[in-house]
Amino acid sequence: MNRYKILFFASIVVISGLVVWVLLGKGETTSSDKPTVIIDSFKVFEGFQLKKDYDIKIEKEFAGEKAQLDSMGYKFNTLKNPLEIDALKKQFVIKKQQFDEKFQAVSQKYTNEVYERLNTYIKKFGKNNNYGIIIGSNGQGNVMYRDDAMDVTEKLITFINEKYSK
Image (cartoon, rainbow, N blue to C red; front, top):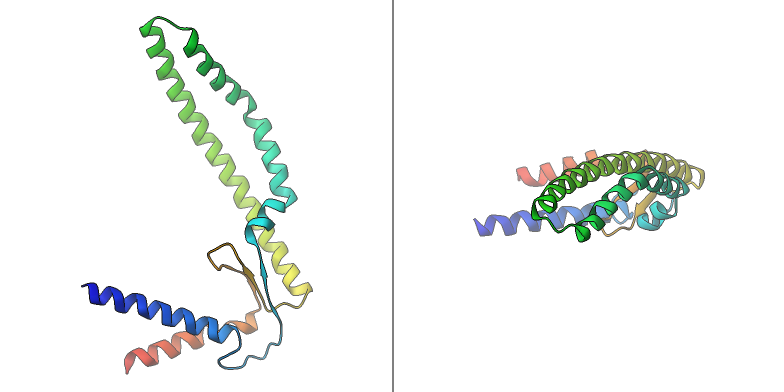
């Protein structure tokens, strides 16, 4: 079983290498002479004004609920009766869970909206600057934009399937 895992991971490495080799123009030539550029995805995301605006909006939107939770936390220090402490603790846990769930949902909604807008702008930026590929360098190697003429997916699938069948 271990041998199969090694072969599987080795295959993935070889396939990834071939994709990079072809995309960087070392394999078959493409009809596109458009440059490949790299962006720091994290800096772009953090520097996008819409993201900053949403951060402020979230802060304002949740300020009241956060203040309530903080107040409950301070109240723990003033209580002496174990029954009151236990009741407040249960109340706090429920409110904190509700706050966290609501905050997560709103935060995810805003993050999705930011990425949707960013992706639209990145594509326009790529087209306006005549870039073939924009690679996001966030440690994951995501491709943020690519010109359709540079898509070699089908060629690669044909290649690897031909090699596999031999």
